[in-house]
Image 1 (tube, rainbow, N blue to C red):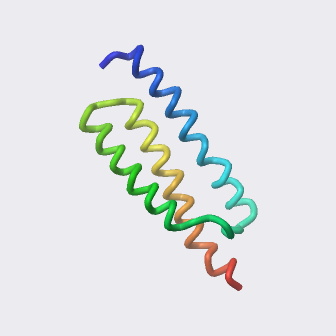
Image 2 (image 1 turned 30 degrees about the vertical axis):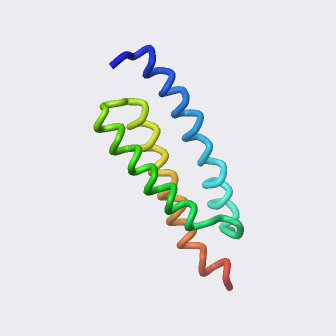
Length: 90
């Protein structure tokens, strides 16, 4: 593994993974999921799982890091969508 190349992946991983945080924070603060697509997050989650498996197969630290953290953030968003769905319909 070339760590000089892998560091580029780690920087990209931090930038792309952090993109999920604002929506998650907004959902937690407002408890409002209107305009948030459960289908999109489910498809994204399974795509992330695929990337995570790929990261393990090629032994890429950056891919494993990015998709582990992204997977947790997206899974948390999915749980919040399900949790707040009934509250937003009332």
